[in-house]
Every structure is written in C-alpha cells, then in structure tokens.
Length: 75
Image 1 (tube, rainbow, N blue to C red):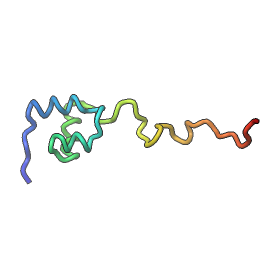
Image 2: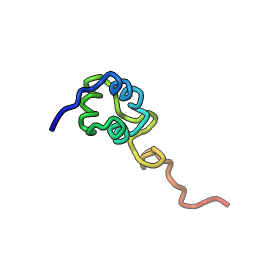
Image 3: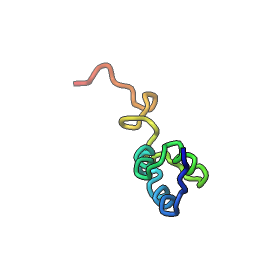
Image 4: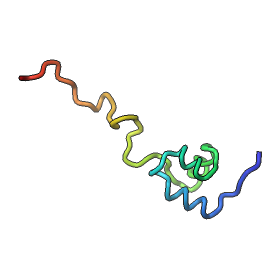
C-alpha cells in the first residue's frame, strides 16, 4: 500500500469540510481512507464531529431528553 502526501489544498479542504460534512463524504471527496482522514484531523487538531448534532440519529434528542408522553390526553 502506498501513502499519498497531504497537499496544502487537501489540508485546506479538510479544514473547510470538517464539522460540516460527514467524515465518510469528506474521505470520498479527498480520496482518502476514513482512518487516514481521522489521523490527519487529529494531527491538525481538527474535530470531525458534526456541529449542531448530539451524535444521535433523528431529532437529536435521546430518550432521556424527551418529555414524557402523556398517557391520557385532555379533551
């Protein structure tokens, strides 16, 4: 397996996309393995975590954050 050098353009694209685009899409765009992307982001001190998301699917609320459902609805 050969390693590709990270060009300045690749690094700039990574910085622009990090936190805004899912890491799988960034990896595909930069033609890098997701693991290589994670390593480079760590070296640069860049978070790949999407901004404004809690890490859960759907509405972003976990079961413990949701308000309890009312068992009887008022009429």
